[in-house]
Amino acid sequence: MMRIYSLSRWLATVLLLSYLILRLFSEPTWWSELLIYNSVLIAAIIGILFTPLPDDNLGQRVFALALFAWGAGSISSSIDSFFKTELSIISESAYSLFYPLAIFGAVRSLRNQEKSRRLELIDTLVIALSGTTLLSTFFLKPASTEISGSQYQVFLTIIYPVGDLVLMLTVIGIVLLQRLSLRSLLFLLGITIFTVSDFYYLWLSQNDLYIFGSLSDAGWLLGFVLMAHSYWFASDEEEHPRTFNPTIVTLALVLSSIILAISVLRPDYFPRFVLIPAFATIALAFLRMAVAMADARQMSEEQILARTDELTGLANRRRFIAEFEQFQKSPGSLLILDLDGFKPVNDQLGHEVGDQLLAQVAHRLQRVIPRGALLARLGGDEFGALVPGYEGIEVAVALRATMEFPFKVAGHEIKLGISIGEAFSESASDSQNLLRRADEAMYRAKREKVGVARAE
Image (cartoon, rainbow, N blue to C red):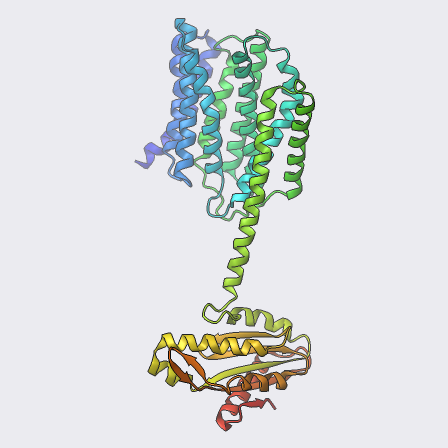
């Protein structure tokens, strides 16, 4: 079965070479253009669907569906040309459907879904749409004045190059956000060849030089075959996604705003199709702002939760250790606190009462901790405090005094004591030594029942 999958990868390439050889030595015929030409596209679709390395099944299938839509347009055009039918509506609709499907499929297929974030996708689309607006303004606007025909024909003539620009710039944006890989390079090369072929076809058509079945039509197929091959290369698992500099997004927003402002002052200066990507760019820029704020808020909440003890609301051991190294660079006292009499309460009244009691203890201790000091729950009924300056003993005495009054929990009046060990550090010192000294002082305070003991 794996052999069949591997053969499907090269089927489109073999058919494309066969078509090119045939066209070099003969004129286009209905069977060469309708059957062989479109069989290359069908083979490319099979190559995409049967790849054994799908990173994103949805992206893979949607991009295959995009190629199927383009193939439906190609088949309809071939039938029209050779059999004089009227299938132009089908072909134009199928070609138009190709672009949204291809953009969605490309984004899903090229992005590393495990590592990418929403902002990266929005940044990519903002850059693509603003680039489309800019290129449409300077290159497609002059061309649009020379296009003859009904509004519908003008629209169809313009929508394809705009779609090509959005698709190619989207892929370029995704590639720029990620480390280069063989998959992304092949896909980008295929999209570029397809876009160049499409622009060349539009130029020939506008100048009445296009002949159906021209050898240049193979450019579209070559682009699709390269994209189909790209699906057979795994994405880089060690990718390091990057976001665009927010300045670029800001410039894109300013550019689109200027174009819309000019269109308000001079309604006929820009063609209407230029305003669509400009509006979309502004909408995405505001969406980016909302997503960035939501992500920042979520990140902040996650950081707080990761460094906070869930039961007491105090700093947890992780934060205590993280700040301990910086704390030792200046004079200060390390306090180790251990509750006296907590275990019997916890065993007799249950863990729920014990948890409520710990929360009340933390609240009392927190009230007397001076500004700039850190109080943390290290685990169980053990707490730690980092007190900068020379007031460590005074703070320890104040912390012990908070235990003088009994606690009222779930109808029970509970009396607890506390043993505190204080170790002072004048300057940067061995962290393990400081912790050991404070811990030994705490056990001495507990053993001698003195409440507070200073390390020697």
